[in-house]
Length: 339
Length: 279
Image (tube, rainbow over all chains, first blue to last red; front, side, top):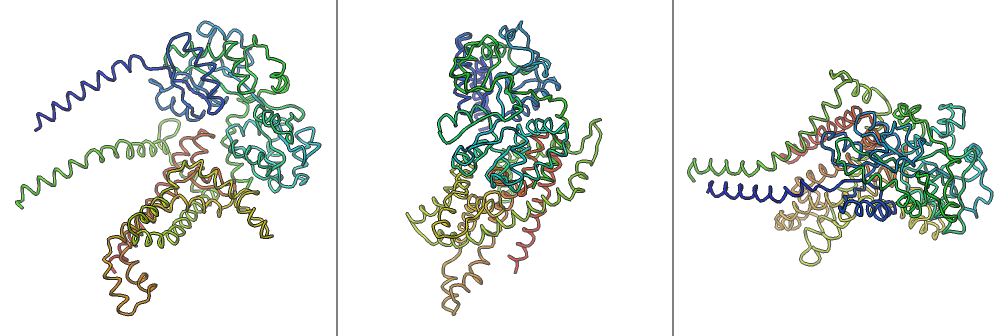
């Protein structure tokens, strides 16, 4: 009986080895994309380019930035991801922890056409793939004349001018700390003032949103009249709905971006994929689909697309290192004070 | 049955539990040990209890821990009160009706938690179903999103099946003649349930309350989507520390405190239940 069992086990192991052997040798490149239209765009523009160049199909994971970071942190010698898509701060952390490999025009030729501003804060461990800004989406019927600048919007919200039909992002939303940094720049770097404003707005805020889907649902259902939201989705919504408008209050907005990077110890095929992502054709195709600006300087936007993209001059790139160590304190302060 | 044969059968029985035991050691106990180590190590590689002092020495974190326990208790009690009659109905029904009732109870588990929560948000929204009804009746509208009540309702919906199925399986094993005897001896239906059925179904009630309480203590998606800053629970704090603050040691300490509280609550419930069953 035991002998028979051993035989069965042995033959199963041999069969398994044969089955796994080729798959180990031909492990597909593992890349990351955001979901929804982002995933569709990644498949249509980046994956297709990679397939054309290599004849291989990559595996596309749709996971968020913190999960990407946690996965590559957990297994740095044999990472389960080759091309990471990270938030700006996670990309800085990953670079500093030795989890990413530096990009250069030698292994990513199209990087030569990406201006330094899109990668210098990350010491070339990652580059921005596309960027956006947080702007104001509003109901034209309820608010015919929306405030021209951020400070007025905040003060009028505190005064109750819009009832409790305003929604701002929470500090605990993924890009919340960046928005908080941006607000501190409006109040001469005074963090206390910003948290005071958050507190004062609370009675007249429908909610501080953490889920973008929920926030947009509330606006679409006309449960709120003013929503501080991502530009691409806001412009797209305003385009489809006459009653909605979108604009950038003065003095502009902060830049938020998706960072692409090669994971250290990941497959060298990652260079090809990143080069595809940064190629002018894929970048333009991506921008057309997601309605966000991209970074390859060779790309020329068609007029109708340029009209709905936030220009680079209107956005300010956060100085991430000036506040990233404060984020845990900001979150604690947010939890304790703004409730 | 001879003694060596019985021992052989016992040994075989233990051997059969080995895969599950090994699985739990590797994938449950292992991560718990890693988590414990993560929570007590300092930057120099030494040991420190600083994260626990920070969590247990701060009124805010203690308040959140208290709120988490109260929410879980409320959800457990509500599930028991709503689930017990439903469990009786399932245990006493037969054929297609029984299958239909079980299907109804289990349905919430077949829907993704995010989708289900968004459903509740639509129902509870300012212009949602409930407020539409209230407006029709010319009553004041209610705010349920961002409140403990709204979160509690959404959590009871999804955790109810665990309570109902645990109790129903015990009720099915109770001899129907005991109930007949109680009624023959003059007990009302309510008294029969309180003095005969309920004590006999206590094992199912214990299983259900343990499951619902433990699952409530660990729930965070519903709270994250439906709640606000004033409805904070411990698992959500763990999530924030991991994914936003990137403070793994503190997240690990909060996670261990959560596990410790659940273990204490489980031991208490089992202790109380044992006393109840003995009586």
